[in-house]
Image (cartoon, rainbow, N blue to C red):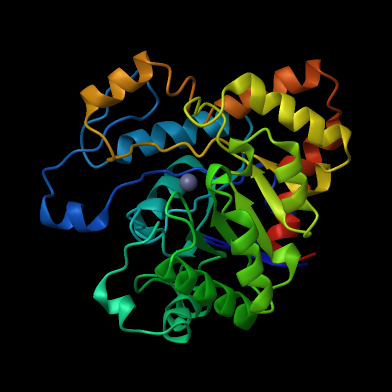
Length: 328
Ligand SMILES: [Zn+2]
């Protein structure tokens, strides 16, 4: 049987179980943290305060997920989101939640001169080392490759990171998760780059496709053969819950159950905004129930009521993650 790398070592694919494909235990900028370690992140499961380095919040999120029957998360925390695999490993060991780590670079355009001065193959070498040897001096290996395109579109730097991700995927067989922005029509060009580099469609997941309910756009993406993430439940600022659900149901009706994932893109803590701004955003309705529990507490019961079958659910949460991660 194929194996899948987690932060506590490889597991048989059959042990993956119920999997949320896109959740962050902690999201913070590693350079800011290094230079101003006193700077605090905000957020976490909303009813509780979370000082400190985000460990307690990550534990709470992981425990909440386990209680709801989640066995595994894929955590796409890459460079610039503060990837720290020892942190992830401690959370996994304490809670029993299996955590699948990644390599890659999360940028909408900016790259440090280190990467500006190197070509895609040299960047791919670093990704491959994470996949084949281990991350940050550990034996923890990356299971997938993260990259991103957002409002600026597929800029020169973003294209370079996509080509590096693609080459690392071709060299190792590891799948790719590409953050996308439907409102900027990023997916078609992202997919085009992956295909130019020889990546198979089944290795590619276009994250955040569920930020639109434009079914023509979504079917255009699906027709290329890639996976899509319906993965930001609770982030009302990009698309309200009811429209996300209507989109998911329409895709199930049209027979795409074997190409989609459900998740929330939650963060145990995140450092993008100070706490008072987060509170203003929440008061303005930017997010609602946006945490690791939303898929099991709201999404699944509502989809069931609308006619989703147990088999469809099992595909989206168990079999699809195995297929994307192992290529089988
Ligand atoms: Zn994310």
